[in-house]
Amino acid sequence: MIDLENLPHLPGCYLFKDEEGVVLYVGKAKDLKKRVSSYFQKRDHDPKTASLVQAARGLDFIVTNTEVEAFLLENTLIKKHWPRYNILLKDSKRYACIHLTGEKFPRIRIARKNTGEGEFFGPFVSAKERDYIFEVVRKTFQLRTCKKMPSRACLRYHIGACSGPCIGSISTEGYREKVKKATSVLKGNIRELIESMETDMKEMAAKQMFEQAMELRDEIAALEYLQEKQNMERQKKHDEDILNYIVRDNTVYLMLFKVYKGTLEDKQDFVFAFGEDFLEEFLVQYYSENDPPEELIVPEPLDDSLVEFLAHVKGKKVRVTVPKQGEKKELLDLVLKNVEIGFFGDRKKLEALQSKLSLPKLPNVIECFDISHLSGTATVGSMVQFRGGRPDKHNYRRFKIEGVEGIDDFASIAEVVRRRYSRLLEDRHELPDLIIIDGGKGQLSSAFQELRKLRVRVPIISIAKREEEIYVPGLKSPLPIKRDEKASLFVQEIRDEAHRFAITYNRLLRQKSLIQK
Image 1 (cartoon, rainbow, N blue to C red):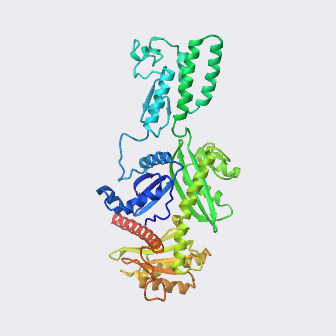
Image 2: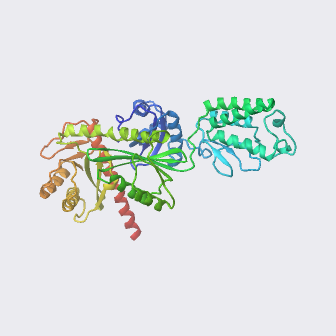
Image 3: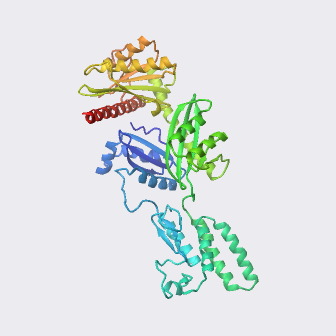
């Protein structure tokens, strides 16, 4: 179910997904709300876009600080998910870099892939900016570009564009010094280099080495102009995870950004109940199953034993950073912005549902049940849990129906409801704020009777397919909620997820049955 109201008027990337959660299309936007809304407002789409809109069942988005960051993230997400509705260029894995080769006299070149000896700089967002930087660095430091050094001077040497290492016009040490300066520029250390060169220029002028001083003056002028126009990704040689969260109503809303070599590639979000040591518990569970980064950026200090645990899992030291200012603090704030926009837009759905159902409190924890079978065989039940308006997949449950023969959805629903809540009562776990049943009045009645037997007092509703009518116990007619209202759309979203989860389990059992035969 796609909810457009929660989209912000901010730059970022959006991901259309199918009913299985597979990414169909990745796009970027200067204004996420306007761009995504346009898909559903226009009626004269081209065939490809019309097919995408028809196939899309879910939407995710990541907010960025600038439109340029959205460009970078879009490219990365496309290469990660390979969505079938995006244009996929086999020879364009990433934006191009500038490469200083590892030869005795390194040459400077444009590289599409970061493979081979030497150093790579970038990738660059804009081909125009990349080419400009390439030309300035090449001309300023007179670096060679030839694949194979010629035996005699070429035209580039004669016009002053190359220092001529091929004919011994410059020593190995002299050429290495030029490469060192070029490397410093490409790493972004332009100001430091300019200051050093200005000192050298003054010394040469004082010694009346005017020709060399003029060469340095021209190089400095080119670098100062380059400093204003340079525009590439952050240079990092290690991976980072950036984590931030908000605690509200005894619930933790947490996001984790994955940054690889300076490029934001993905985000993951989590919702779980608040506990005193929730951050430590989360980090232990998450990094027991995922490789820790070389640097973890978090909003608060971690216990030394937890840092040691991360290092043990990683096999080497993990740097934990709690930034107070600068670039890393900006990244931490960006994650927090995504938490606020991504999660608390969902609160509106909860408030709408509470209002329409006249619930005593906000339905922060919702559980929904569905039954799936194939002509009465491999009957299964599914239960999905939404917490804070989002799927909490850690608390999904599936049931193999044991006490029902043939096709009997009423009895099957009764069985899974009985098994679920008798177990919660036995273990003294929290009960949900709302229960949803996929089906009409019959399924609702069966589930409600089981709750009464267990003395479970939790609001329960059902949603019938086709007309998407919502029923409550004791009323013959459905509630007066239109199918396109926010509350109904939210219930449909939850029901669709329960249906998807049930079908997945049903298919799994059928596959196992075929293998056994």
